[in-house]
Each structure stands twice: as structure tokens, then as C-alpha cells.
Amino acid sequence: MNALTSFLGIRHKHHDALSDARAAGMVIARAIDHTGIDLAGWLTPSSPRGGSAPRPAASGPLGGERVAILGAPRDGAFAHWLAAAGARIVASVGTTTTMLVISNEQPFGRHVDLSPAFRRAEELRCNGARIEIISEDLLRSRVG
Image (cartoon, rainbow, N blue to C red; front, side, top):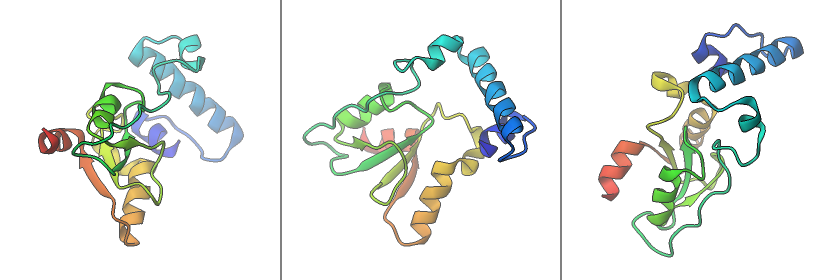
């Protein structure tokens, strides 16, 4: 929440219940303004925020990769493209993740390094894990 509130310019005292609740409300209000999705749409499990990840193709240039996506839903068009190339889409960065892809749609802009997923991937890399951090554009050009 700190990275998001910082990016949005929302004053917030982390781990203070009233401040956390206020910040969460302001974040959802900004999301409604930005996307046009109403509150009911954001609260509905089938909303476009991300659902079940697509199944990976049996083979492809990304076969064997376990990919976390920063900034795009796990059931969106980009996730389907990754899965068609053989990648398994994972919900978050963990010890078995092999790639963190920074989506062109990601909400952190130039502050991607503030996101928890990016920080976790960097931490894993520093501890010797084989995890690549790559932009969507670069991955698309590499895969073709």
C-alpha cells in the first residue's frame, strides 16, 4: 500500500487502521475515475482485475518459465499471449518464479522499483535465484 499511495500522492500513515482505511478508499476512488469501472464492478470477483490464469501451451519459446506479471491481470490479453508461448502464469513472485515481466500497462510508471513484486524479485536475485526481470516490450521482441 505504501508504494501505491506514494505513487498516487495520497498521504498515508502505514499500519494505522484509520489511515489505511482512508487510503484504501482513496485508491479505489482513483481506480474508478481512471478505469470507469464502478464500485460494484471492482467488488465483483469476475471484474477485469484478474481471475484465473490461462493454461500454458504444451510447448513454446517460454516453456518451463514461471512468470509473474507486474501491472496486468493474470487473465488478460498479455497473460494469454504468455501462456500461448508456453509460460505458466503465477500469482506472485516466489522462489519458483523464473521471470517477472513488467507490463506496458503497469501502474507504477517510472517507480516500478517501489512495487513489492519488483523488490521481491530483486531480493531473490541477490540471494542467487534465477529470476529475470524484463519489460513486456523486450520479451515480445525476444519471443517474436
